[in-house]
Amino acid sequence: MEGRTLHALGYNLAVSLTQTSIPVSPRIGRFSYAIRNIVVEAQRVEAAGMNVRYLNVGDPVAFGFQTPAHLMTAVERAIRDGHNGYGPSAGILSAREAVAAEENEKGWPISPDRVFIASGTSEAIELALTALLDEHGEVLVPNPTYPLYTAVIAKIGARAKYYRTDPARGWIPDLDHLDSLVTPNTRALVVIDPNNPTGAQYPTAVRKALLEFADRHGLPILADEVYGDLGYEGRVAPLGSLDLDAPVLSFSSLSKAYLAPGWRTGWVSIGRTPRLDEVATAIRKLADGRLCSTIPMQYAVTAALTGDKSHQVSFRAALKERATLTGERLRAMPGVTCMTPTAGFYAMPRIPLPPGKTDEDYVLGLLRATGVLCVYGSGFGLPAEDGYMRIVFLASPDELNDVYRLMADFTADFCR
Image 1 (tube, rainbow, N blue to C red):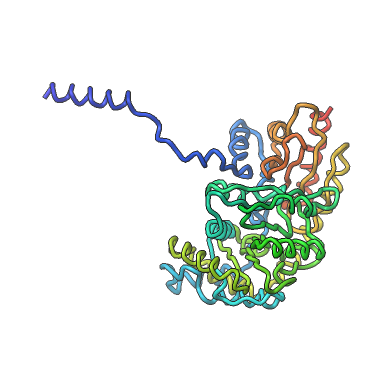
Image 2 (image 1 turned 30 degrees about the vertical axis):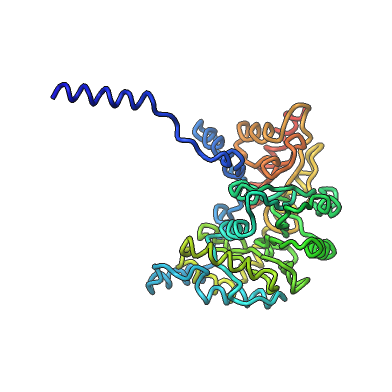
């Protein structure tokens, strides 16, 4: 018995001495999502006793905006009626019909069989990119960009190529630069309009030029239109409505305009052109592989898109008030520049950094000194030395005034 015990101990010791870490894919080193990654440092600051104001994630519910009651009723009814099992991979028919009907009403005719319900816009984007890319593929993404795109592209093993947008002209895409990036490996163009992270909207002439560019190069457009209902002067027409046969895949969700981000219910709508038939088939196949997205929440899609939308009127007014305050207060800080947003709830100011400092130095310093958490611009693809950062301005005007007071005092010291 004693011999067997010693033998076992020796075996276990030998195993422990020879074990090495299990390797992970090299692609993980290229995967980054700064909006969430920076929270680790915020938690350290919080643990040290400082109150942290989380202005890094665009979650309206976290700032007191309430999910409309009729959406919650629809989900509760679905649960009580027993809709708790698996459902169709593409999504329940009533939800797909509601999405298609709204797109048609907005001037972009699509059919329900070209709509796929997903676990948030994030999954819809991943399905589309996976359907379009191989490891040699390239995707044209705006700079700055929403980092989910570059994270998913890296995960697939493909390559993101940034096209410039001009902050001096309201973050409008540089079409000449865009044209210079096309290669035989280019597979898609990402257009985020209204824009996250800048709060910009593109003029109609620019939108038409992007459609013409994509058509000339035979590229599908991944049109991120999550904030389309949150233009302060009214909803923004779908990009596909400007050319009904353009190869456009449009993404949206219940998260932002319908104040239900935690439900993870979004969709991709695919234009009617036969050029996208194989893409639609591929997305359906990928959707089959993950069974379905959350079924009870899908019953809220019809309630949201066909029901009372009066909450959007007050929400847009609240956002416009906060955007105006944000632009004015930021531009009042010496050396700080910032476009006043015209949609959504993000602003992207530029801080005049001292020599040798980066945007991450500024953001981490602001967090540690004041408890205000934003996201550095390099997390969205901008050069770290340029000094950009993204602010979520969903907090109340009183709280935002307090935040900008703290930020002004810190900036004056940091940039001295």
